[in-house]
Length: 455
Image (cartoon, rainbow, N blue to C red; front, side, top):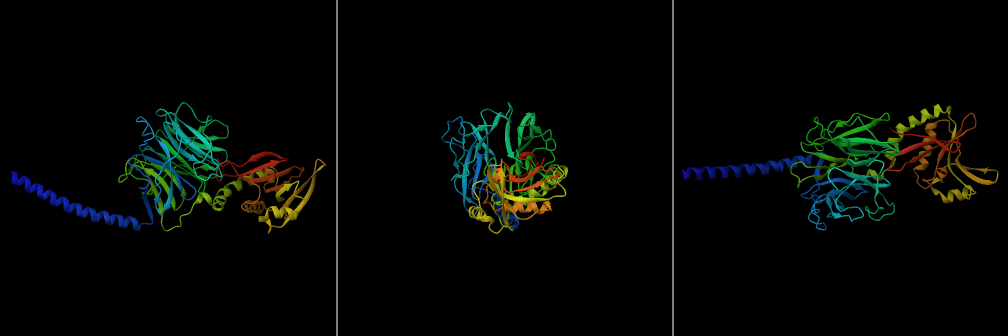
């Protein structure tokens, strides 16, 4: 009997070795086929740990900030696995520096995550007890040498409640989209300016919606949900703004993005560069951060490229602007593009010397008197536009040169016109508070009366 047992043991070992050999060959073949694909999904092993690593955000071309609950020897035993924000930098192709934990200006004694980034603000999530976190902002420094340099944290009192608000993204204009469980499950909410937040019913279900990220280059909101029609637990969905409204959410069916596991924190930076966090099999442990790249396209940093963004977002707003101009009786259109008005720049030569980017523009100077005592010199493109499209394009062209003031309305390029009653109108195009939210403003006799809004 013992000999038979030994025989079966030997047979089992032989079969196991044979199977392992075939498995290794098959695994190599899978890897070869994976590499041959146009799209690759790469586990970022140099920054991932055996714990949860999630919430990746690119800052510029090579810096990444993410959140992890990896062991933290600087904390006491009860907090050594609390969530903290980490920073890393790419030093070679798919090779990143060892992540470093940002200091206490970002991280609190308990759980802290970076949950959103805008042009002017960082958004942080802090929680001191289960399912009752709050969102804070910190002003980004445009002159900071390192990406983590920012002001102190300020609580967002207008959206924080006794419930859990744990994800947020800036949207167009003065709007933010965030997640809260104030209605039971986690839902997506919209807040515009100082108004009360309202649920975005087109996205919300009886299940959880979370991890919001608005992509300005393609005008699309991405989020995760564990609703049953998905592929795994949490899956990634998207909704694009069409005709100034969000479309019904669509499940991303790319198997590189959604798997049979939990897939969250999707970041779309361009068609060739995406990130997400997932607890899919073959990871290092818990949630890992993955980089999705399309090899056949050039990978570039869309955060620093403005012209494609302008073209994409301006298109829808122009139609809204034209409708408003017709409502105001400003058609047939007749306007000029003014590029500046100054009391202490008294000649065209001095104006061009100060702002050399407009050297090739056909500019004239008009002198006017304000209150019959103060001379003001207006610098204007020497063309009368009867086509509002051409006037807007000229205004955007001059704005894109980036040598003229872009903060104070009175000094910015704008389209000026008069109605039949002699009222003075001005159309300004300006980036609003956060990154690449391109907004048109209309002023009447020096007072703002309207601005575009995409939803």
